[in-house]
Length: 292
Image 1: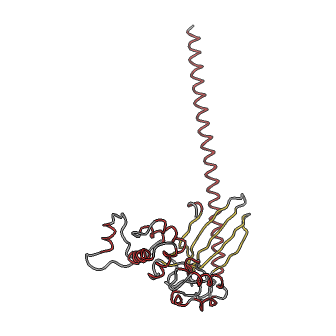
Image 2 (image 1 turned 180 degrees about the vertical axis):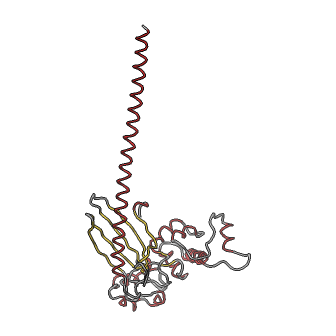
Image 3 (image 1 turned 90 degrees about the vertical axis):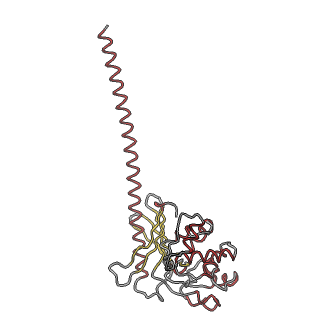
């Protein structure tokens, strides 16, 4: 009888051990599967980043060797590499409003174009200019005090914008209006003037003295291959315009891998004259960082 009890105990113990081993095997199988998925995703990311870099190299090749006046301000091309098909489109940052250099009329004009009331738009433009303006000497700092009194967790940089994302920190500008403005602003134009041959219609409409009819005519008649063609249409907006390329260019890259997966990237590069490298990356965002 004792022998039977002992055998039963051993059988139960063996069954528990087998169950534990089965659970361990299941956990390990899940771990291996997750590792394989992660490795595959990492492999796709490495491959995509290499292809995006190839697109940037080819973009830089099209832009080097020119002065700003003659540098191409836009273009597009397709190339195949490593079983992937890749499309690149690039545009000069001159088509965007620079938060560090834009005048109040251009900034307020953009906000009006995007739906803000003129009085509010002027106030928003003042706050942007105050954000980038050096603090006054002494102990008094009215702009910083205004943020504190408003209960804002941020304080004005009172130095140049480092990123367009800082626009979300500027006081009183509604979040929805900031989101609407971000596709039309930059910190890489490098000057106050806009290249209307590359600017979005919303940017053209923001220029001083512009009206919908004139803006539509400019969009219709402009030609980057003949950049002077629209100058006669600008009127009082002429002082806010500078035709020609910039050293900073925004490239939009669309990669279609051999697996069929697509990856999008938006990268701003700076052409470097007489440097060790032909260009420098100023900003990079791709689908692996989140939707563009």
